[in-house]
Image 1 (tube, rainbow, N blue to C red):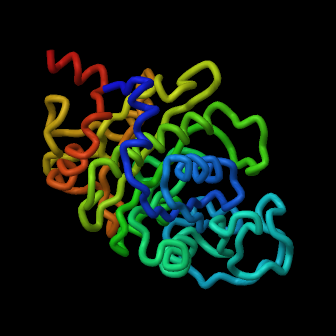
Image 2 (cartoon, rainbow, N blue to C red; image 1 turned 30 degrees about the vertical axis):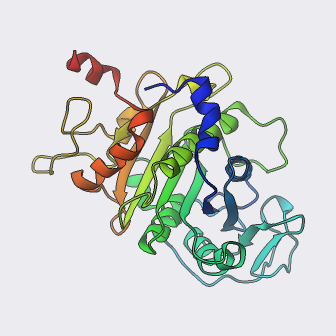
Amino acid sequence: MRLSLLALSLLPLLTQSTNIVLSNDDGWAELNVRVFYDLLTRANNSVVLSAPAENKSGTGSFDLPATPLIKPCQFDSCPTGSPAQGFNASDPRLNYVNSFPVTAIRYGIQTLSPKFFGGAPELAVAGFNVGANVGPTTLISGTVGAATEAAKRGIPAIAFSGTSGSPIAWTTTPIPTYVSTYANLSIIITQTLIASGKPFLPSNIWLNVNYPASSSSSCSSPQDFQFVLSRINTAFLGTPADVMTCGETRLPRERDVVGSNGCYASISVGRADTKGDASAEDQAVVLSKLWKILSCLPQAREEMK
């Protein structure tokens, strides 16, 4: 289902302020996460960023104590000798942790959230990542590692990843098309989930969201996209059925959704403890919360006629 321009503009107004901890694995000074932070804040949320001081892509759920900087932070965003954890002088809600994504988001949950929210965050979001995280890639993704760490600690979480782009500094101007497009799509999903009410997700559940390539000439606007409920891994003989949707009890793989002709974004429901697919029951909960923005792949729509 496509959202109208009016619906897109009203989404932030239909939800109350939510306390959100934000992280990634591409680094605290990467443009994607800073643009997402700005839009989450503009959508009336209370947000704190707690992300690695350096690019820590592909580090999965590695976890080590943070240490002082022996070289400048990513994109010279903090000098050599800076403390193990630090913040932006002009916005103390922008924080770095000189360690892995898991370490960073835990610092956000345990230390920064009580400081800024007076307690635990209500939602954790990670990304949006530079590069897709589909299928087995979820096992090594630091963005997924951050989201699943939050979910294991009882915080509903979403990992966002986009196919296009490369790591670029937060100071980059003008903002590339893919960055603004992915950021707005991520806001749509986040605000729709928030508007669905608490609990946002079942216990131990996280969402894995992936976007196809976006450029100034293709999939260049949020209005070009449709969201499809998907599964992370390939289903084999004996794999339990998925939730019934689009006339099927087998969800498409997220890899196939993102790789389809057109601008289709995948939303998969995962278990935090395994980083694999959740049960049909948990998928059904997510379907009931996001159905207003979900669609079907063209083949499924044809088979339903």
